[in-house]
Image 1 (tube, rainbow, N blue to C red):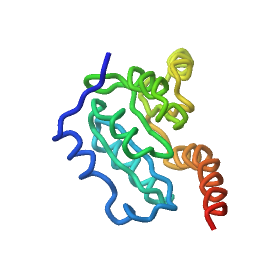
Image 2: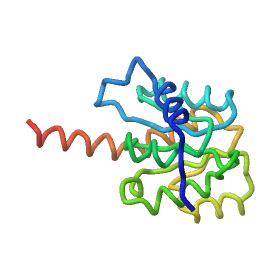
Image 3: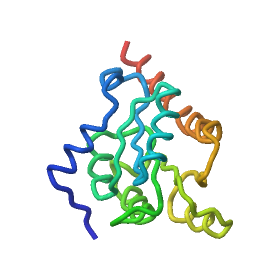
Length: 160
């Protein structure tokens, strides 16, 4: 199965990139894929409060292309999306050399123990079920971005 996207979808991905932090390359970049506006707004609020740059998408069809192009430090991915499910998307991401090392968090309404196990077994690095407390979401983001921030710092030291 291949994931294709139109120029319009790429434009939408570009247009939802957080403008005020687009050029500060020291801040982590997060790709958030969520089809419900309220959930996307909550995620973007959490990311902004943590000082992250972010790209928001409501459709999963361009996720692999956007991830390959922008190389985000973290991907937050809903499971129940129109078109490709989050599980399908994470499988593609983990098979692609350019995106396989990017941590991916499942943000989903699927909340049973069996759902969690199935989701984590499909390749996600972490899981949070809706509804969630923003503090819990921020804790997951901080934990997963900590190593990325450390590796960026080491890289910057080598560049001096």
